[in-house]
Amino acid sequence: MKDNIYNYSRSSFEKYFLSIGSPKFRATQLFEALYKQRIRDFSEMTNFKKEFRVILDQNFKFGDLITRREQISADGTQKYLFALEDGILIETVLMSHSYGYSVCITTQAGCNMGCLFCASGETKKKRNLTTAEMVLQVLKIDNILKEEGKRVSHVVIMGIGEPFDNYENVIEFIRIINDDKGLEIGSRHITLSTCGIVPKIYEFSALELQVNLAISLHFPTDELRSKYMKINRKYGLEELFKALHYYYEKTNRRITFEYILLAGINDSLDDAKRLVGLVKGMNAYVNLIPYNETGIFKRSDEKTRRDFFDYLMKNGVNTTMRKEQGHDIDAACGQLRLKEMRCVKD
Ligand code: SAH
Image (tube, rainbow, N blue to C red):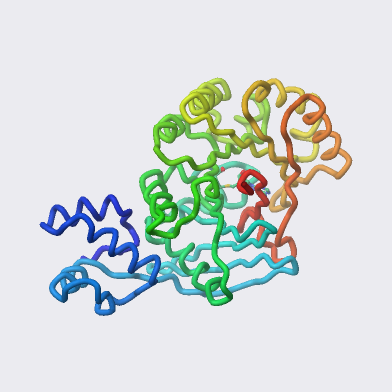
């Protein structure tokens, strides 16, 4: 069976080409054809000899995502509903910022993490997305932007799914979009968000890629976090923070903590105090998120959010309050979470 050509990073192609007796540099040529020239037909890859094009054609296909729906919100946020080859529907969101265009990627069809406040958890994981299915989300949108002389400048891996539960495919995806012969999205413009699968944080620390890490913390005590986020029953706060300190030692990179403010649950000043206790002294950045009301929970009112924010700032914690995008197209968490991540600005 033919494999999808967008499943392979350049180094994976190099290994493959060496194994079939072709020189390594073909990988770079192929990448340029795929990602610079955007060729989607092997017969058009005229920089390769015919015999080589035939080999590629026998072994690989391009695949595609079929656009089922497109919604545009008043603030310019665009949501795409794509069908995968087996008919599964996924969502990808394009957000426009003063600093560029960012795309929010889905990594799994459904999610098994079961966070109570998150609507994606209501759909059990059907399967992991392949690397190609993630690459195609970026490519499709970049092709649309290209027609207007624009490009995708940032990628946030924060759509439906837990990226660390689909680790290999997600890392290969990051390699492809980051490659300067690929989509050339700078590593500092790529952010991966996880609910905290600890062994993968260690693995991620050893990676040569300098991408941003965001942790969906949301609750400042084990009692609360375990109640609302199943993952905390497996990897509690102590273990999580031990891994994060290790990550920081290894990479020297700032860590973003996401914290949804849920009315009456995690939004008191005592909670803020506990949060300060957890992140103080770390090179941390807290992103306060107004909850998108998808289930039984309510978002904290504005004054509570403001007070929480002020408390963190007064106590020396670098904090931002996330502004929402795409509210009017219902394109936020659950169906799709729309993020304004300051940390991906630089
Ligand atoms: N599984 C990963 C990435 C997907 S979730 C993770 O947990 O980080 C992306 C972010 O959206 C997480 O921080 C998640 O907790 C948050 N989120 C989920 N439901 C939300 C909602 N209704 N409103 C606001 N943020 C939500």
